[in-house]
Image 1 (cartoon, helix red, strand yellow):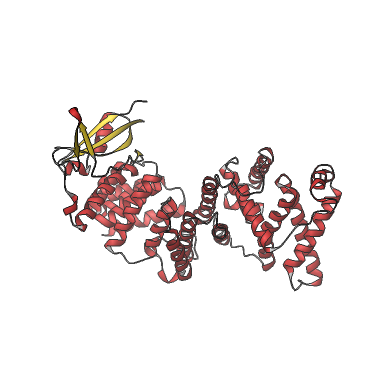
Image 2 (cartoon, each protein chain N blue to C red):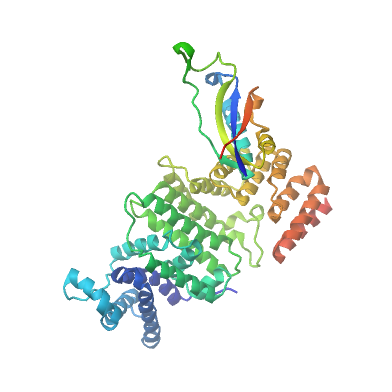
Length: 411
Length: 112
């Protein structure tokens, strides 16, 4: 199920979000669909023209020029613009028809404003992610549907509702005012974090798509680091976190579908450049006094980039998980914390703590208990692994657990 | 689930004499205990940390400066936990480092 993008598809994907942002900025966000149509038509014309005449020396400039023409055409033709937008614009700038400004600066400003508009808390978070994938990352509807493991209709409906919200809530393309920016930035960072997780933990087997999702999330967050007002320590922390995780992308995946567990990963496949970029941003995130969950998660991910098990490593990870749980509880973090406790302080202490968690519908819980009881009580270990086997949802997981039971029986 | 406050009391101790390792070990004890409650999803609030020094005002306008060596059990800090019953909240208090230090944990339901 590997789907590689052609260079042209790649260009379109990159340019889609820039052009939609610039044109939406010109017409207003309520006309975002028109902006999308204009850009799609431009791509269609490019595909047809370039097939005949070959790709021009500067394809991006070609796209912008054609998009400008199409914008003007739409502008003159469409009644909505004639009756509603034109009078408004007339008041501002005489009779000259507006022209999209594809300068580097305006592209960047428009994309940033679009990011804040899409991540407006008025829109449901699932819809925010869908809309972000579409208008900020230039993903096709079929790709979004695949990433979410759902149908194209569902995604279309979700996007439709999200765009309707943009209109009814009168969401504008602008940066929030100074006193709101911190709270709004939290929401933007959260959506980027979810986007990344969607790619990193997605159950879709399309690896190219998953990696794309992660890289797009990273790109959006890097965009936020380029603006003074959005470049806060927590922004750096999120970039660092994503760099560290993404560095292990190739190592997590073999050619087969199975996920390679951390302990079995080939270190040589870790991306050293991403790790050192992560360190750079982790360093920068240490400015200021705020300790966000991204700071803690980035540090945990940093420690995981050291393959060697030292006592200090797991003690550090344990303390970071302790702090993370105090800010942000989730069953997954609770299980990871208990695993770190096991690595730092041994199975006896960890098993007592694990038994208190009572996550009895979670197969990872029984997997953890299976690991903890391995040396203390093999019979209990086996029983727990069998529980995990019963609860596991996919065949791949069941096979992995079966292998663990087998390994236990051989000792 | 209801909320309960866990109040820590322990004998006054002069931490200025403690070594760095001792302080680290003590911090780990507290953090691991708090992390254990948080891992069960039962930590409602991390309370506030109280500094070692301060003053006590008693009847007759007597003001005592801290650290409170003359007070047998100094009030440490508190946290808020979520539990279904007073019994469950009391179970959570087990393992609290204040008890190891010959102190106590007082468990009180929060009205509301």
